[in-house]
Image 1 (tube, helix red, strand yellow):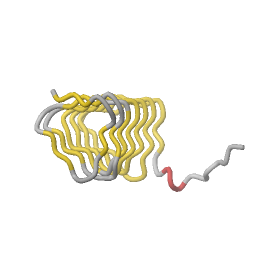
Image 2 (cartoon, rainbow, N blue to C red):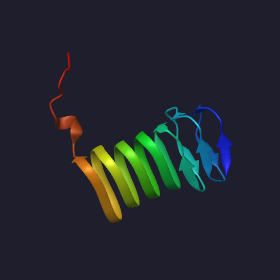
Image 3 (cartoon, one colour):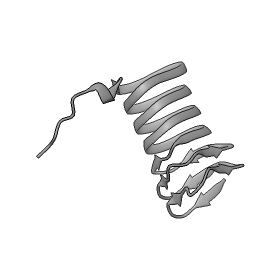
Length: 118
């Protein structure tokens, strides 16, 4: 497992041939492919392809993953075997082979009226 002791800033499409542990956030609107697992605080990128994700928050367009254990997911498309999450907010679809566990599951969030907090 490769350990990165700070934020991982994606400046181009990036591939790791092993699992990664990021002691900060993963940022940058590029694609991330990990031939293993991802363990980090937060992920903010275009597309994720990996075996397992363990993090607090994910904000991306597509996720293709075996297992996700996460606090919040904001994503366009999720293709996954198992999802265990406190809140999933997505605009398109979830394909899950086994189960989706979420306290909140909000579909088509872009059609919802936005509230402005003052």
